[in-house]
Length: 218
Length: 256
Image (cartoon, rainbow over the protein chains, first blue to last red):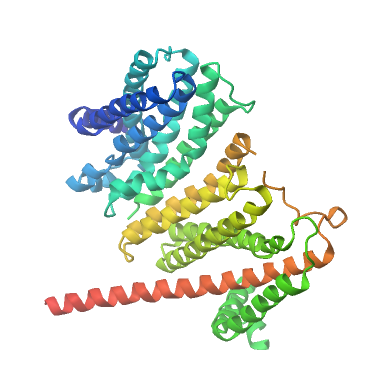
């Protein structure tokens, strides 16, 4: 347990010292929301129905940017091999990275939701919405972090990660958009979308925690 | 025949003799599979074009069913092979399974593309549109994208890179396990495509017998074709990997 904590502490410190990853994700998310607001403003005055889609597409792309280099720096510096040699369960290495990425992305998402509240004049920081966004974040961050391990080994990883992760994340995208619509009092069908988000989050974190040690084994 | 089934001291019981039977059968695939696949495919084409009756409402275009439905089943079968072989890559650490997984993924993507293409051609006159965001269509398209991404990842990495093979195996497993969740989500999202009409109880059968027989012939034909293609692709991948390894050895030798 203390070793897992040490790993998490290491990852949070790395997150703070290595700000380029999540800062570029934040910059991208801001520009993305601004671009959407320019684009839709010309088309329709009623932007509220478009908001859930705008938010979730921005989150997923920002997540891809923030997670893509999760392990790349450690692999390049050679510290990843040292971590694998350390007497720490490998699942802990993964969980530490996922938690650090979650912290970074939740910060980005809160910033995006604040910005969208101002730009689209719709109050977004409600408990129901924050809950669905938080659960969704755990879902996509855990899967994208697992897939980013692959990136450290191939050429053209910046292109490869979204190509790999986005088809897998389609259920999460649909469920996220629908549950966000529900939180904004819009018609969303009668399926239990938040439950699907929870199921996806549990599935992806359990599956990834089981598969990560197998993937990095030498 | 007796030499295959006869138990010997080091056979390891039932499983060992079964394994040797499979190995023996595999040795013969080059002689057995091509003619059998050829005959089955000819039977399928003749059945679909000549034997099967014209559908009363949809007309001739309905004959696409005899290739559309078997392609879907073949794709699922190929992806099942990818899943099993990916598990074996992680478990046994044997790159031969990786070659089979890559071969099966290529064949699966091919048949998914065939299914989507025939579905679009069939949908145009019947539904009035090539494409609709229906649950089944969406999940098939996602299946295509998932395994196309797998092939892309696999082709970007070095084919001898065992680490990349392990990562790709992890991706293939995650992708396969994601399929039920995708199907559930898109079913809730939109649901035009007819429900399955083949896999039903005998008393509840909706297709007339002549059509059903041709469809079964098509399934057998396409399943055999799938097997043959997977075997060919896997062997190609394996020979390709060996050639790369040899070239690397040669380069090292010349460097010294």
